[in-house]
Image 1 (tube, helix red, strand yellow):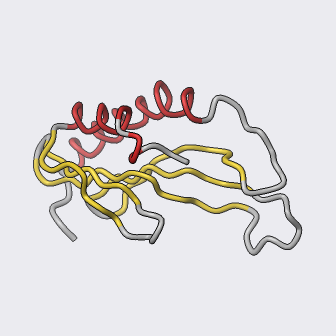
Image 2 (image 1 turned 180 degrees about the vertical axis):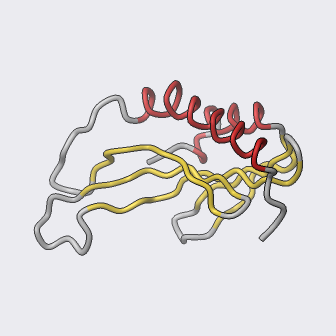
Image 3 (image 1 turned 60 degrees about the horizontal axis):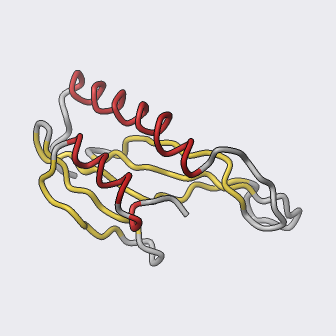
Length: 122
């Protein structure tokens, strides 16, 4: 499962990621919710899974035959390696994670998510 960050560091990472979500990702990739006849994005958020912080996009379907009215689709992940050291991965359409960048700082990891199109939400 990997090394988990100590609680104070985890709180600082979470706060930085929440700021990044609020100031960069949501304004750029989800400035407004626009319902369609297909699945459409309604939120961009993040959450921890073990030693990994995953960035997710929540989708909604208004189709009465949809299996689930809402579902989450991950698009990028920060894997905690050590203090201020992360691997950055992209979530492939196959459901697998592919590491694009190794051993980068949190600041660099967030910059990469902002600039590398592979790491953007759909």
